[in-house]
Length: 410
Image (cartoon, rainbow, N blue to C red; front, side, top):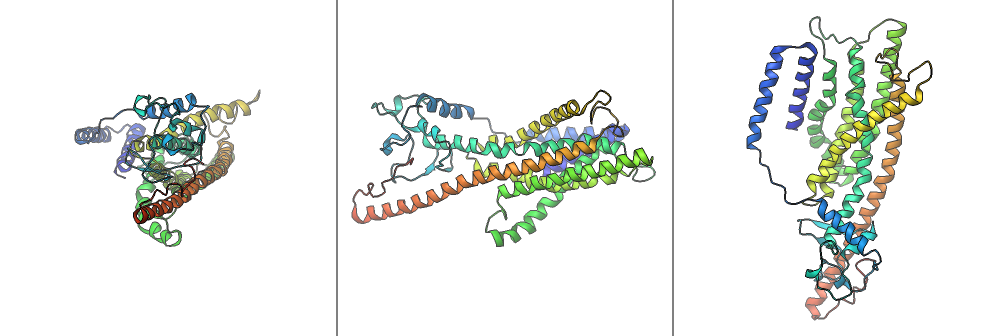
């Protein structure tokens, strides 16, 4: 929250100083940046301990090397790093400080944690040939969240429009707030983040306790549902942008009239509401899915989505200009004049693309939830079985491992 506040103040000051070349505000901005650098000396930075990519690569290499290995071992001792004190318990306690649940997805990776039957000792086998069960589950988690991550790329493509074309829209409109003060068009992109600063505390204070009464979820609604709401609302941000751009263009071309810059604030406000659900929900989702050692990496995937979204924006602009260009017209966005371009049609295209992306997200979120639900149910069954095992072992002292007789990997 503090970071967002600082970023928005910086954006507004930079937009104002670059637009009107105010040296006094430039001095204030320079002093603020110096003070921010000073406080970095007091940051608590933890040095990195190894690379997260090496264990991931080890799982894939081990699975490929043992691609002919049978996936269903009859002996649990063949699973490296499994809990042998409680038979067939699929709740895995990793050395990274988190409990992992066995999942049925990507079962070809399970070969990486199966010991060979040639009698070799584990200590003599390379980590590139044999991985722990917890290590395999971490890789499965990483692969499972990639489709959710990919569905947010289009969302950030819309964000790119609000920071580029929408600023150009504002430059073509009446920016007067008073007779002597004009609103810098670039400062409009701070509206979504200012909404985050204002709405997120209200969301956590009022909406979460209210929704918790109906859903029973600690966060009010699940992170996947929160992301879905945000992706859905993002569509209406582009719908509002297309309608306002059509109105602005018609007024400028047909009536020679300049609309106020406040006409384009709805698209920023709607996107701010959308980002409160999607961006915050995505970070919450990644943080809950990750284990210790992967939290920073999965959280960083949020910012990967930002970069991919902006790259996709540039690609879409080039493709649209190429497809819509004719011998007499350079395309929807060819000219550097919004009164000649058809930015409204480009916004409508993004609205359709955003809605299709929302439908795609529904598919992948159900796919992810289905696997997670199956894992939780399996874990509950195995937990009850483990409790029965411990109870019988204490009462009879007999080995009842045969009673719980199904394999670790069905």
